[in-house]
Image 1 (cartoon, rainbow, N blue to C red):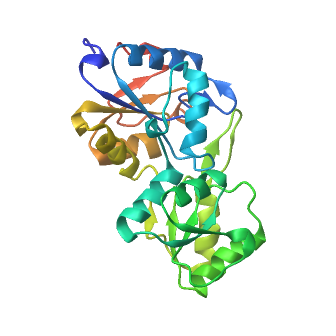
Image 2: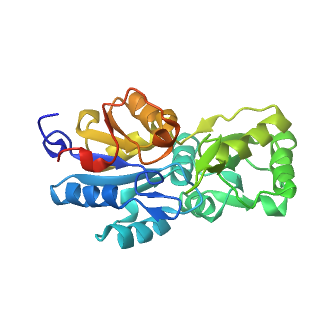
Length: 265
């Protein structure tokens, strides 16, 4: 790769877990490279399948970590994506949320009327929206089940990740929560917003005003980040500081790097 990336791309679509941090550990080599990319004029948008935090909270955290202002508009979460996609396709809805505060905040921010699964199912409800819920209980699952079976609600998923990476190992992800609901209801989700679906990358490119050839996705997972880039028709970087490096995976990314520092700017 003779020429630097700053001469080829205008927008970097940056995953968080496995690229900026791994669990509670900051990935300093990657962070410094991203700072330099911004200094060279590249626009950064952070794109994560994690729906537990809102864009507002991620923007605040990233501003502290990166050392430059990160606006809410510079973050796309799967919670925001599913809320926005539902609004685009169906308008404002009555939704039962199985997820954490970040998902609820983004659903409300798009004008949806949000019911809590803690309160049980109430009809009418249009959609059950599922994200990662680390406080999942049988009561919540029962409420979601009843909303589908008794109220006729459809199912939307923030993402289908079966596991999430931790500093050591992994843990059940939103896909595991979703799988329980699908097993009990026999239903299938009619909306999935997160990677590997291309919607988050496409929404970020629209908001910035760039074409697919001007964007570069950076991620640590073949099955989500790199696959979403393929579906969106954009180039990608597989960085081996996260899941792929741990598993020894390789996939048809445009570039592969042990850390982002290996990539010339």
